[in-house]
Length: 257
Image (cartoon, rainbow, N blue to C red):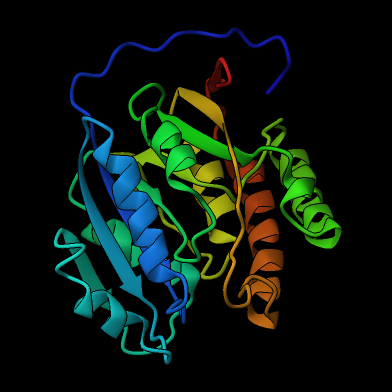
């Protein structure tokens, strides 16, 4: 994508609906706060929605906690993997089960407050893809993790010839497009794969700043050996995808929000 691409205002969408997919692996300390922030954000919006929690074989009682709080979160649907299948696998299961017009994945680690989620969800339908990126990442993450995230973004932009702010943040996709994608990554690399492939099938995107509060309980599962291997595999996959892809019309960036 070049810097001289035009900025456009997309047509108004009259039918707005959103499936929120929440993969969770051993997030007993965070899952209820995550659901609280998601439901509070949705309560302020005129947006048809559903919430799906995908418990990825947790051993800390995450699924039981969601089940025992159905009186507080009666609209949440819980799906449980028999064993730990990985973040990407859980995400794909949620996408397959989602029933509404747009789909977003929100991590179960309570990294986003209700205000930033409400703002992000409010953009449903304003472009084919809504891409979240972290405002002032270095203020909410360690310099090591910030450097790793920015390096990953730089590499993917180099591979794909784009200038996106972030590839691993929250993304709202049209359900029909997302369900049609063949996603091979199983770990944290899957978000970049999803976004790169979805951009090849859509016309517009909107980048939205979000305020990250980062997890307050428990340890991140992002930097496991399994995920590192998957990210390397994803980068190789994206290189092959871009190299073999047929020429596409440029995807137009809608003015950042």
